[in-house]
Length: 148
Length: 83
Image 1 (tube, rainbow over the protein chains, first blue to last red):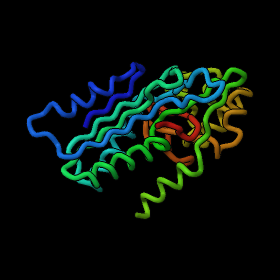
Image 2 (image 1 turned 45 degrees about the vertical axis):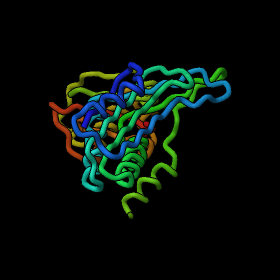
Image 3 (image 1 turned 60 degrees about the horizontal axis):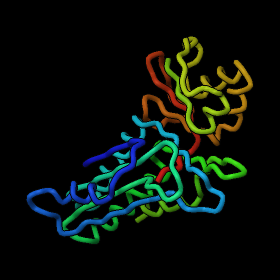
Image 4 (image 1 turned 180 degrees about the horizontal axis):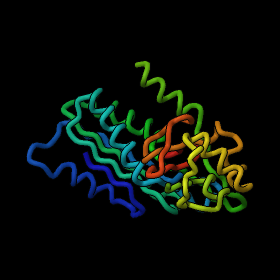
């Protein structure tokens, strides 16, 4: 398990190499990258973070995913700070012997990252700023996993 | 005790963190919010609607009536919006 919570950007290709650079490559690799949406009038996305808590929470989420699916490797990077539209926010790579496990685990990890990891987004538009509020659908998505 | 604030909670209180002397009668997160709210308007506004606030004791998400002690780090923040 590799978890990073940091301000610096990441290079997707380097992260894939880091996952592949082992003796016995995994048969299935899922890669999710979340980026800052290019919205009209959006100048910046500021992400506040409680790094120690975020890392703890991400570890718990990965542990729950590993209890549920057979995963070989998990690599997660979540950025914070001031980001431009189009910049990377989050990377989740899961690997497994089978595609079903790594697809599902990747989606599970992202769904829980949105609502359980200690990050808060603030949108800075040309004419206003707004803290993003947690969506009811984000909570219901997590509950759906719990009922599966 | 170390207190930390994040997102709009930090903006309203105008602090990211602070050290406080925990009074003997403040035994839970709820007590702490009430005690801070009596100190000034910033805390009072931030903690006005407790349904909008979440809290952590030593980086673990906690409940309103969980016990706190002098050596704990307590954080206040809105519901998370990562990813």
